[in-house]
Image 1 (tube, helix red, strand yellow):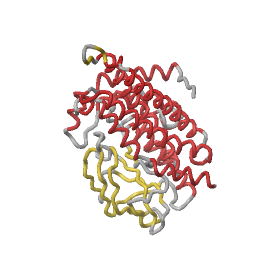
Image 2: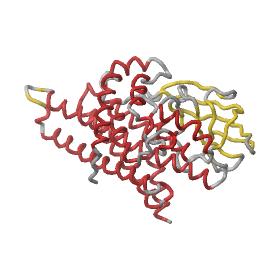
Image 3: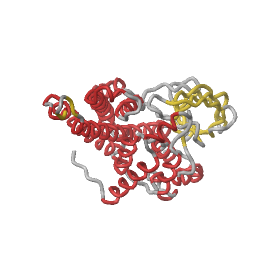
Amino acid sequence: MNFEISDELRAVQDSLARLLADHYTARHRQALAAAPAAYAEQAWKEMAGLGLTGLQVPEEFGGFGTRATDLLPVLHELGGALAPVPFLSSCVLGAAALRAAGDEKLQRELLPGVAAGTLQVACAPVQAGETAGVRAQGGAGHWRLQGVQAHLPYAASADWLVLPARVGGASDSALFLLEARSPGVRLRAHRLIDGTPAADVQLEGATAAPLCAPGSAEAKAAIDAVIAAGIAAACAEMVGAMEAAFRLTVDYLKTRKQFGRLIGENQALRHRAAETLAGLEMARSLSIAAAVAVGRGGFGDPEAKADLHRAKFLVARNARSVCQAAIQLHGGIGMTEEYAVGHYLRRVHVLDHWFGDSGSHVEQLAELAAD
């Protein structure tokens, strides 16, 4: 798929690349790893200064109201830099959830802060057909949450949480909003395998508000909107990680010598590099298709829904293959903690499991084909 970004977005991408090079290096990554809840705060502030945090917020609430395809260059840079910033959690998922909320007063209260980067929303990376680990009880404006939301990204630094919860004993879920430090909320901060700060959220009668009336069509549509936005964003970030891993590998093949000659002159290694490039280009096209599908209606359109499931499955599979090949082509250095190429594979593994793993998307495609 041929896709060219505008000159304005190209300038934004270049600015973000310089920003991350200045404020998030390998040294910063090692320092942040020592603190369970830390993220790249300076890089986040600079991103807010560039207006990136408001890309998915409607203009009437202080944002830019851009399309999902306009996020691609930003997510590519974040994936390539492995930057631990709450962009996907707050500015993509959180913004999607709040845009779908039925309460305009709530939107006016929270969305301007999201756009400015001064307010963080930690939204759970839900998946289609998933049974929520949190239960909601109550009604008529008095809802309380009970249960555990495990591994919620950036929960420890968030101001608000958006969690899926089962309504009563029903299998239907709705998205609920609650303050991160309200009574009945306990957080246990830790890091995921890729270094992303996260927390297990223990809820013991915490007061929350549904974004849409539980059990309604709007509640299901809100969850679907978050999943669709998350799938497209995860695919784009995986492509960014793949690109960076591929560049590192090509540079290594061009400079590493063995037995007096560059290892890149070895035909078998050149063929392996060509295979990884083919996988990268396929994933890039599928990522664009996923972003386009969000604009075509997401899960509300059967063809767009199929494109999203297909993209998530195939991008993740190609991303794993490319990053594994990159490690193998590097040899022993690719396995070290200090070298970045192994960290790209870890990030891909995390993104692969968010919004449904490969098996779940194959099942969804089979159901769509049967229908």
